[in-house]
Amino acid sequence: MSAILNDAQGRLADQIDAVLPQTQCKQCEYPDCRRYAEAMAVGEAAINQCPPGGEEGIAKLARITGHPIIPLNPAHGVTQPFALAVIDEAVCIGCTLCIQACPVDAILGAAKQMHTVIASECTGCELCIAPCPVDCITMELAAAPPPERADHWRARHRFHLFRVERDKRERAERLKAKALAKLDDPQFQAPDKQAKIQAALARAAARQAESAPALEPTVDPKALARQEKLREILARAAARRGPPAGETDHEDE
Image (tube, rainbow, N blue to C red; front, side, top):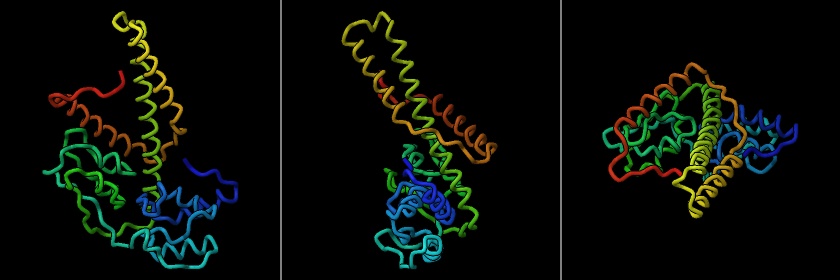
C-alpha cells in the first residue's frame, strides 16, 4: 500500500517518480519505483538506492530533493548495462512462477505450457530469474531503451497492480459463489460440512476485505486487449489438455 502523504510530499513524490527508471526491480528494497519515490519524499529513503538509475539518476534526485550528490550505495547492487530476460523454451516447464513475478506482465504463457518474454515490454528487472525452478531464464544484453520508455513501464506496472487486485477479487467472488451454492445442497447439510462452508465464506470475505482499491489502467487499451486475447487463447489450449494425472482443484470447497 502507498504511504499516506500530505500535499507537499505528494507533489515531491510525483517529481521523484518522474525521473526514476521504472524498472520496478526492487533493488531499492521497496516494492516498486513509486513506493521508493514516496519513501524519499518523506525522508525515509536515501537518493542512492537505485542501481538502474546510476549516477545520472542520483544527480537528478539530488536536484529535486535538495540533497547532496552521493555515490550509489553498493548494498543495493551496481549499475549494469541494460539486458532483457530470455526464456529457454525447450527447458521451460510452464510453472507460471516467472509470470507471477513480472511487475509489468511482460511474460506470456499458461500453466504446463511454454512461456515466452515479450522483449519490447521487459524492463530488465531480473525478478523472474530467482523463482524459476529449472534455471531456464537468462539475461541478454540489449540496446538501452530511450528515457521515455519509463513512462510506458510505469503505466504497465500500474495496470499490473490493477489486474492482480482484480484477479484476487474475482477469485474471492468465485469461492463465495461456490460456497453459497452448497449451503442448501442436500449433500452438504451435515453440521461438519456446513461449518466448512461457513469457514469458506469467511475466508472469501476476508480476501475481499484485504484487496486494495483497484487502480485504473492507463495502458493503451488496444494493446491490452490483444494481450488479454492471447492469454485467453493460451488458457483455452491448456484447459483442453486437462490437468495432469493426480492433479486436483485446490480452490476451497
